Length: 467
Image 1 (cartoon, rainbow, N blue to C red):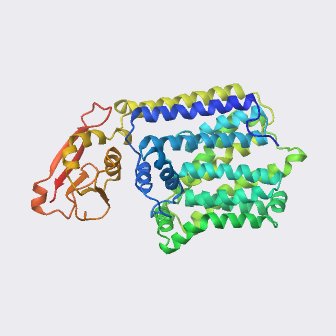
Image 2 (image 1 turned 45 degrees about the vertical axis):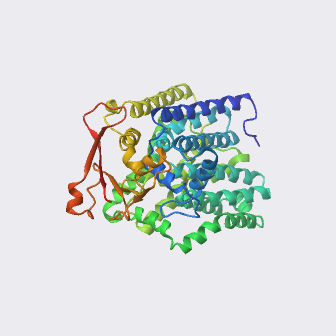
Image 3 (image 1 turned 30 degrees about the vertical axis):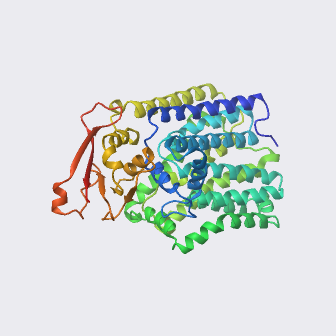
């Protein structure tokens, strides 16, 4: 069994992984230290206090940020840095799995091929927060699972149970990964022998110990968070959207398969060595169930809306399985060059999106002028004992991050209780319906240019002092 980063070769590749992730971190932080994505804004609110659960997301990521904020403060650089560290950990774990299974050359090619899975090469750096943590835990689970197959130590069962519980506490659709591990183990002789025995009791003990506090909270809360997740899937009619659901479900694995075949079709070897045949068969069955299980869930629950992010906990298996069919190849030079080109293009797109919105032809979250808004409205804001931001989570989180001492509330409802100063984003929301005619006459308008933008389109805030 290979140890992780055992020599200079592995340390060199670890260094390149860190550099790769650091470039994205620098691009993000150099563009803004205060702007947030919608997921980051939700996390900013959830991490402001410790709870066993929340109505929209599982709590694990919020717990991590809350714990770290006690040391570093709750701010955007902390959230962005933690997310990038998790991405770096993900690629390091993937590298260790590949080195565990394959030789150096195959490992490098498989790792580079993750650039073709856009969940990990592009979306990781766009809006994935809780999903990032789930993917890291899924990769760690799979690594421990493989080690357990070779050496069924009691420690591995306990660690696997703990990780699977943490995976569900990170994102509820982690259940896809849990199901595929159990089901694929049933159909493999080695996995069945290792995974279903007396030591499995340790797995269940640690799983229950770690997950039970949150599940008790879910029960007492009426399973609102689970209902929220299912409602998102039920937002469309499966009978009417079946083609769209299938496209969303299949386009990423099909695209990766096509690219793999273009480069390596001549090098595919379907014969496995006898010492690895059980592992190879298991990997193939795991990949098959990785897509069969979610597909059955879609059909059973009649989910008319499907996001590729729901497959984030299983898509990472594609390179791990596919490159098991490659022993020798002459295409690695062209493949490396193509991967390098695509990585460079992604870096360039991110740089333009963050720093040149006029060239990008689109303003994104990072260009919202919350800092300018706060500066202009500073006297109004700081003199108000009760501020209400109506229906704009990004504005609320942006102002709160700039001054944690603001007495500010966020309202999703049709009223803002006891609000002294009322604000809303006029471009995103209509004026609140609960305002009286006289109050509407006193509405003030603030128009501000977007950050790093010289276009005529302005960010528009409406505000009103109610009392």
